[in-house]
Length: 173
Length: 173
Image (cartoon, rainbow over the protein chains, first blue to last red):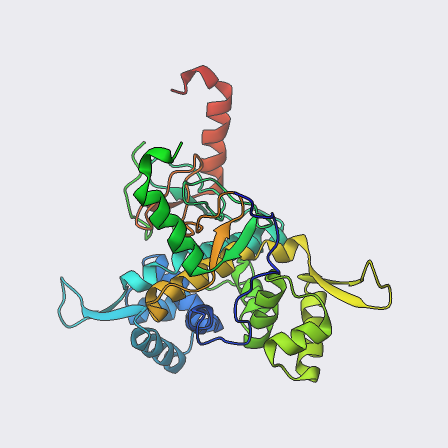
């Protein structure tokens, strides 16, 4: 279709704007050291204040502050424990769970470039017990895309293509 | 194979340790606002000091400081420009390019949960011009795994399984 490979420098994002990019918000939620450690513990199934305290070796007031911030950001939710209504649980929201691919991508980057040793324990597919694969950039049909084979297109162009394809489904090979 | 689905709370990472986790290092490189904006510009093909300055609306001394830090971290490299040896270029290293899946995962999270509108321009596969898919957690065979279908296993168990399979390749369906 004539997209020149690797030509990310013709069309560009508005680079000076952070308001139209979701990344800063995500980094705010994860970028602070204790928030990140709390999130990692939450992904590991930790739910109670005292368990976070013990697992992380964090000061009580810092834990309390960071949990509140993560609840405010909609990443954790505060709920009464089902089997003991007096206890409070902190659980990941759907929005919180959705941070996992980003966390794992950063984690794999660190394993590859910083640690030089594979981590133990290993994060595995519960279905077959095998280690998960690398987090990759995928095409619409699931092909892994090399980072040099990306290009920017205007939303108008992308939408026009989709409309054209929808109008002539038989022309698609 | 009998892995209970979603049971991330039996075997756990050592949660109090950050030294064995690569994530903090990755966040240090990306977590600071200006560093992130410089990286985003670099992924968009910006290479020269004056171009970063103009594209980002950043102060000269901050840009200089952050570029040095990213070079020290091995994420950018400082090189003489090929067609004008007096000019200096800042280019992403292989290690730097490897941060792209994490950046895109965070970006997609922000688009989905914060902005509520699809971004424009759209990042597309240069091969077919279609928008890239969501960054997902993949099994070893490329299946997309739900975040609730993950489990921790010890490296010893994973290695033992791999050795057993290698010894009996015909037994694999």
